Length: 481
Image (cartoon, rainbow, N blue to C red):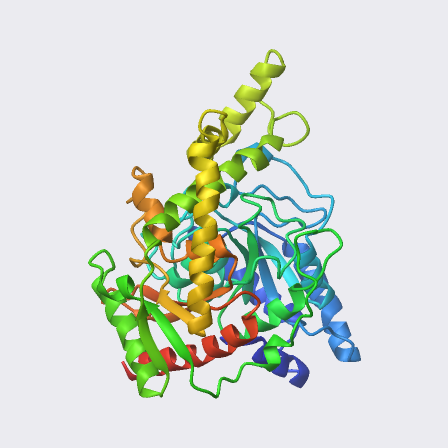
C-alpha cells in the first residue's frame, strides 16, 4: 500500500484514477487484520466501510464529493455513532448501541469522511497508558512491549501503524497529545468550546475536548475546520466564526516563545527529551524568534487541581451508569440497592472506581470546601497566570511528556507515577487553551518524542501555522540524523 502523508495526496490520486476509496478501504482492512496484536480497534465496520467507499467513489466521479472524501477515519470508543456500539472501553456499557451521532462525527461524515471502526481507549478516557480498557491494553507499534499512551491510545496507534489515515480522539488532560507524542504523530486539543461535545461520553465536562490525531498538522487543521462551530445541542460550544484553518498554515514572522524552564532543567525529564527540546529552542533562536524561559510558580498545583476537579465531575457524570436503563446489569442483584452496587462494582474497572471514589469524597459535605472549592480557586489562579504569560508570548513550549513510552505494566501499581505522565499536558485543559503535539525525533531506543505548543484561547490559526513551521524544523532535523 502506498504511504500517504496527507489527505491532499490521497485526493490527488483519487482524482487521477490511480486509486479508489474502495481500494483504500480494502488495504486498510488488510492492515487492521495483520496488526490485530496491537489491539487498536474494538470493532471494525468491514461491510459498511466497503459500501460507503463505493458510494463516495461515485460522488468523486460525479464531482460532488465533500472536502474529506478519501479520508479513512477511526473514532475513539467514547464518540457516539448512530446504530453502532459505544462502550468507552468499559464493561458497564456492554451491548449498548447509540441512537444518535455525535456532532463532530456527523460533520466529518457530511464531508464524506469514511469511518472504518471504533478504537480502543482507557476506560471512560481515564488513563495515560491505554491499559485500563475492558478490551485489554493497546500496544505501541514502535515497540509492542510498550504502551501507546492514553487515553486515546488506540486512535494514535491506528494512525501510527497505518490502520487508518486519521482518528478522532478526546482530550481531558492530554489524552490526544500524550499518545500522539508516544506514537510519533500529530495530536491537537482545541480551545474548550471550539468543538461541540454533543455525543461525547462525558468524563469531566468542563475539561473534555474532541480533537484529531493525524500524520500532519495540515490534516489536523482541516479536520478542526470541519468539526468546529456552533451547535444547538451543546450550550457550552462557542458561536465564534470558524476560520479556514487549512488555508492559514504559513508562518512568516518572528514569534515570541516562552518555554517552561523545568522542562529542560529538571532531572525528572528524561535526558533525550531535554536534549530534543533544547535543540528545537536553539533552532528557533537561530531563525530569529525570541525564545525565553518562563517561571510557573503554580506548576506543582497543576496535577492536584486537575485530579480533584476531574474526579469530582466524573463522580457526577458516571452516576448515570447504574445497570437499570442500559448496558451491563449484574445477575446477582436482589433488590434496587444491591443491583446498583453489584452492577457498578462489576461493570467499572479499578481506575474508574478509584476516580469515582475520589470524586465522591471531595464532593462530600465535610470536605467540599477543603478540596473542591479550593481547587476551583486554584484553577482560576492558574488560568490568570497562563493568560498573563500568553499576553507576553505568542506560544508556550514544553515537552509533551517527561518520559518516552514506558513498558506495559510498569506503572499500573503506582497511580501517582502514572498521573505524572500528564504533568505538561493538563495545564491546557485546566485553562481551556488550545495545544498541539508534534513529533520531535526519537531517543536512543527509537522511541518517539513529542513537543507541545500552547496558544491563547481561540488562537488555533496561529497555533496550527506555527505548529506546521516547528514540525518542518523537527522533520528536517530527523532527516539529517
